[in-house]
Image (cartoon, rainbow, N blue to C red; front, side, top):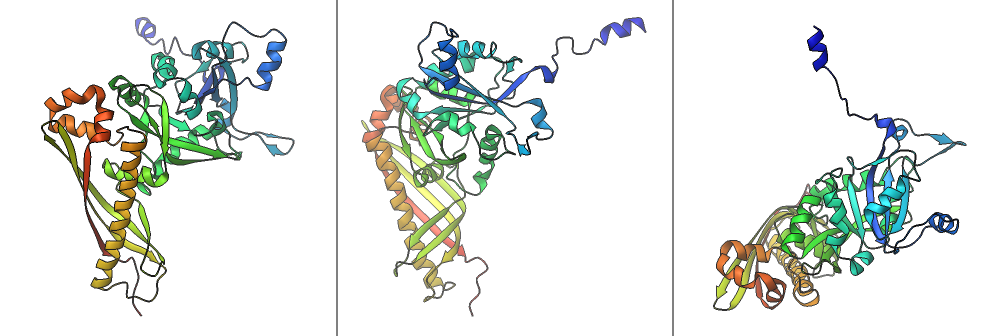
Length: 386
C-alpha cells in the first residue's frame, strides 16, 4: 500500500488556472504607442527598442468563464486587452510580465490577426517566427488578416461576447456561404511560407465594435508581403474554383432588369493542365446544380422548362463574368496564383513543374485559362403556380 501511494503523485508540475493569464486572441499592428505606454515611458518605463510592431493579447479572466461581473449596475466586458510596442514579439510578451499579476499562457490561443498595413512593411515569416517557435501556442490556431487596425477586431460592443471566440466561431457559417474561406491554421501557414507560394487569407473588417468577414487578403509568396485584396464575390469564386465551396448564391438581373437569385446546392470544379512545348494552359470545368430561390419578375411562369433554361443561361453568364473578374485580378493585377493552378500542374506534369516552380507566379500570369460551365436549375423552392 505504501509503494502504491508513491506512484500516485498527481500533477506535480501543474499550476492552478486561477494563477494563469490565458490569452485567446493575438493581434499584430504597425508600431503605435498606446496612451498608457507613452505615459510609462515619460516616467522611465522603457527599454532599448524600435517601435515597429504593436502586439495586443486578449486575456480571458477566469471569472469571465462563469458569471459576468457588473460594476455600478453596468456589465463589464468578459475580457481584457493588453498592448505593447517594440521590435520583438517575445520581448513585448516579457514586458507584459512586469505589468500583470499573472503569467500569460498561450495554450488556448484561438486566433491571430495581422494587419495588412504591417504586412506591407514586414514579411509574414518575420512576424510568425516567434509564434511558430513557441511551444505554448497550438499549431491549430487560425490566422486572419485585418484591413484596418488588427487590435480593433479584438474589441466588441457586445458585453456578453469574447471577440476572439466570436471570430473563430463565425467560420462555422461556411456551409451557408462560400464567401468565407477555409480557415488557414498555423501549421498550414508554415508550409505555405516555406513553399514560397502565394496564398489568400480571410480578411476582417471592423466598424464600431462589429467585426465581419469581408473578402480575402493576398500574400505574395516570394516576399511574404500583403499585395492586395479580393472582394466578397471574388472570394466566393475562389472557393468554387478550388473546390472548397459548395454553397452560395448568384444574383443576376433578368431581361426586364428585375433581380433574381440562384441558390447553389452542389458544385464541382476540375482543372486540367495542358503542356505544349514551353506553353502552359489550363482548362477549368465548373458544374453546379441549384434552385431559383427568388425572382421579382411576376410576368413569367417560373416552373416551365423553357423558363428554367432561359434563367439558367442568365445565371451561367453571370457566373462566367464573376470568374473572369477574379482571373483578371489574379493574373494581371496581382500576378499571384492563389487558386491552386500550380498545384494542379505539379500533380499532372511534375517534370514541367520543376522547370517553372521557382518563378511560377510570373508563368501563371502569362498562362491561358479557359472555362466551361454547366449550370442547371433543378427546382424552384416551394413555389406553386396559381
